[in-house]
Image (cartoon, rainbow, N blue to C red):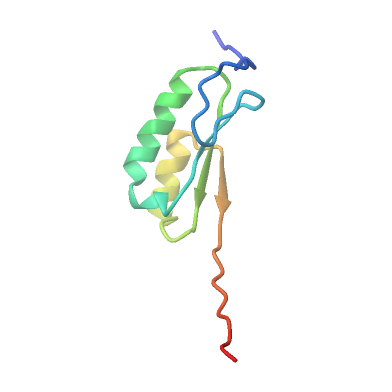
Length: 92
């Protein structure tokens, strides 16, 4: 039986999850360094059957064909590719 995530003011709200949306996000650092952990976590989230989408935010370095296949099989719904740009200030 499929359930919808409910909007509540007293909801548990870890990083990347909010009461007004049905998204769970894995964010921070290069998460693809531990692909098995995030694949297994996604599978557990999907087993809840409460219509949650899983977002994976990454700098892209770990998005190898092998890892992408693993993530697809686990059910990750989307990816955000984050590119950090470091600016150098010239010393005058």
